[in-house]
Image (tube, rainbow, N blue to C red; front, top):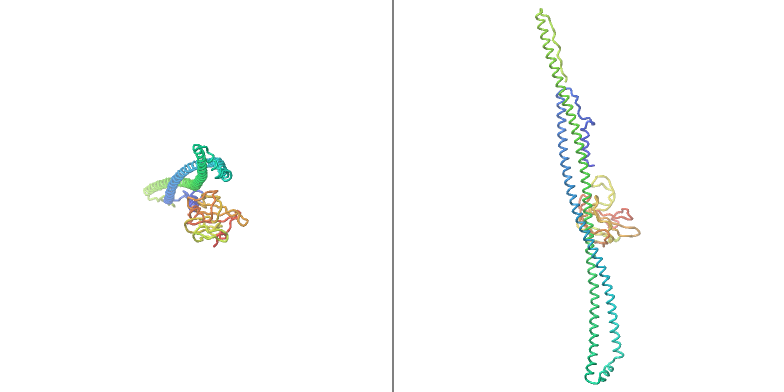
Amino acid sequence: MGKKHIALFTSILLLSPIAGGFTAQAATLEELQQQKDALQLETNTIQSQIEEKSNSLNTLESEKSNLETKVNELQSQLDELMNRLEAQEQKLADIESKILELQAEIEALQVVIDQRTEKLNTQARYIQTDAGVTDIASMLLSSENFSDLVGKITVVSKIVTANKDIVEQQEADQQKVEDSKVAVEDEKLAAEALRQDILISKNNVVAQKTEIDVQIAQVIENYELTEAEKNGLETTKADLAAQTETISNDMAAEEVRIAAERAAAEQAASEAAAIAAAATAANNLTASAAPTTTASSSYTVNSSGFIKPASGYYSSPFGYRLSPITGGSELHRGQDIAGSGAISAAQSGTVVTATYHASFGYYVVINHGTINGVTVETLYAHMQPGLLVAPGQTVSQGQQIGIMGTTGDSTGVHLHFEVHENGGLVDPLNYIGG
């Protein structure tokens, strides 16, 4: 609970009848009036605070409504991305199926190509061995007449032309196989790249939705706290009204008592005057009057194989320090790098987490596998919205994963960088140098 809330509850407690409050046991009307005026002043102050809390509740309700609208918009974006992702997955499946069909076609075509190749090789061997120039000349000389000779020449021409067509078809089919392979691979790469972009967009929308969910939870918490404060003020106001009514009743009773005393004094004075007159008439007999009453009223790889993940100066080291948020002593889990600009992977690895957290803001965790016998992970926090990676993605050393920001529990633009060995925290300078 904040200091202003504690102070407010303290003031409410001090104004309540349990803590003493005002009593209606005054000796004079003046004292009672002073107490009543003081209660009225406190009532006016409480009423102002109640109105302030009512305005705050209206503001929080509006803020909650706006955040819920954003959540609905993000959910719509998420639904659209899921539909796109599903369509892309189906497209990839179709491409895979197409690749299998093409592979079957290529294999069948390869059989034809192999058969043609064998046929060409057989004919070539035949020409080289069995059908030499002498055989062809003998065939021509054996022709009975010119017509027979023309016929044999036509047959030879057709054989040569057929072989030429086979060679051309052979080359065309081989080129077709190569072109088909390239086209399908290009299509597959493009589809996979689009799928990766959709996954990153989806992850960023989920992270933004998480951020707004955290904000909504904070608004609800503030709303409930403000409503409790308002109810406390209403109770105090009712207590002050009851005390004011009691004092008003006491003042009315006091006025009645004073009026009765005045009437009694006047009656006593009248009776004393009558007695005095009677005494004077009876030979100056003395009489005493009735007594009166008085009221009291860019980067360099270190020997560890890691690089500094961002440009800037080291602003807060690993270890115990006074928290800039709470002011208390705490363990600073990592190394802060102050500055601005791109944040890069300190080493190659696989993205484990890329989302929003109430303390870390937008952050990323990368698993670098086993190094020197221990599992090493790095954490990058307080980044701007719009992360450039998604869980499950493989990143290379120096690849940009986000931009420095001040989201979450942060007092300025910087990168909070952590290194975990087997899940335990270690000083990041052991990896990225001084």
